[in-house]
Length: 492
Image 1 (tube, rainbow, N blue to C red):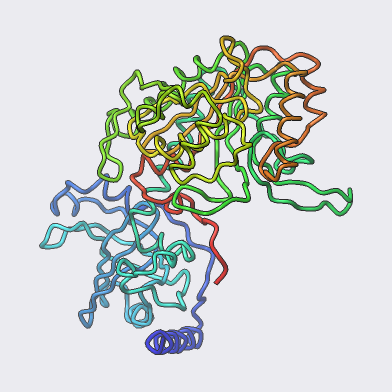
Image 2: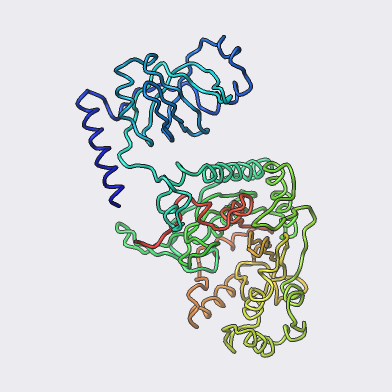
C-alpha cells in the first residue's frame, strides 16, 4: 500500500508538471488510421530494405505497457485492441519539447504515435516515432505482478485491469462474441425469426426456479425478473410465428458456483411441427457447426479431457443413466418407497412423500450427472419435474424431453411442448401443490398463458441452450466467471 501511495503521489506530481506546460491530459481530437494488428499483418515479413521504401506515416493509439529508457532515446510497447507493437522514440526525431513531455509519461498512459516502420537488430517490427502525444493520463499504476495474484476474485472485481494485463482474457471474450454470432447465423439460415420478449414478468414462469422480485411504482404492481422467456415465445408460436429464437438474459435467485451465476445468457428457440427428437438432431448440427468454425475439428480438450462432438451422440433415459452409473436395480426405480430408500442410502435428502419422479431425478443427479463427459442426451424425464413438457405417448409418467450433458454439465434442455390447455392447467395445479408443500421454485398458475393455449398452439418443440456454459466448454474455462465480463460478486 505504501508503494502504491508513493507511485500515486509521483504521478500526481507529473500531472501538475504537464498542466503547468499547457498539456491537455484528456484531448479528444485524435484521428487514428491504423492498428497494431493491421501493421503486423501487412509488414511482419518485410525486411528493412522493403520498409525503407515505404514513406507513409503510420498512426496508432493505445496504452503504454512497457518503457525502456536510453537517455536520448527510448523503446515503448503500445497495446491496442488488436495486440501490441514496439515504438522507438528518439529525441532528435520528435523534438526536444515533445521528448521532455514524453519523459513524464508512465506505463498505463494512453498515447498517440505516428511514424515510419523499421526492424530492429532482433528483427522486431517497430515504429520510429515522428510524433507522440498524450491522450489520457493514467493516475493509477498498473499491477506489476498481475498474473501472480493469489486472489482470483480481484480479477473478476476489476475486469478492466484483467483485460489490460491478460491477453488470454481478451481472447475468451472475442471467442464468446464469435460463438454467439455463429449461433445467430445458424438459426437465421434455418428460417428462425429473432425476437425480444419481456424481461419483467407479472408471473415468474417458464422454468422451475426462484425469481428476483421488484416493484413498478406507477402501476403499483410486483414484477419478476424473468427466469425464462418460454411462455412468451410460445405465445408467439400461437400467433403464427412458427420459428422463433431469442438470445438474452435470464435471472434466477439461486446459488453461485463455478457453473452458476444468477444472471446468465441463454438462447431459447421454438419450432412448430417439430418434436424433441428433431431438436436432438438440430442440437448436434448446431454444436458441430460452431466447433468446426472455431477449431476446424470436432475434437478439442476441456480441462485436460478430450471432448469428441462426432455424431451421433449417446442417448440414455434417466433410468438407463442411473443404472449405468450405480448399483441400482431397474425394478426399485419403479417403486416410490424402494427408490426413496435407495436415495436415503446415498445420503440424499428426499421426503417419503415426494413423488417418484422427483426422487429419480435426485438419484440421477447424485450418481450419473458428473459421469456424462462425452455429449449425451438424457431422455424420458418424469412428469413431476417437467410441468411444460408433452406426455410420452407410451407412458404418461414420463415426458418427451431431453437434457444435453457434456463434461457432467447440463448444456441444453428441450422438449415437445405441452399444447393441451386442460393438461397444462392440471400441471400448474400440481406445481401449486408443490409450492404449498414448501417448494419455492415450483411453477405458479398462469391463467393468461392457458388462455393463449386455448386459441390453439400447433405441435411444437422448444429448447434452451446455456451460452455461458457453452463458452466455458469451447474456451477451456474452468469457471463461469471466466466467461462473463462482470460476474455477480459478494459485496466487499
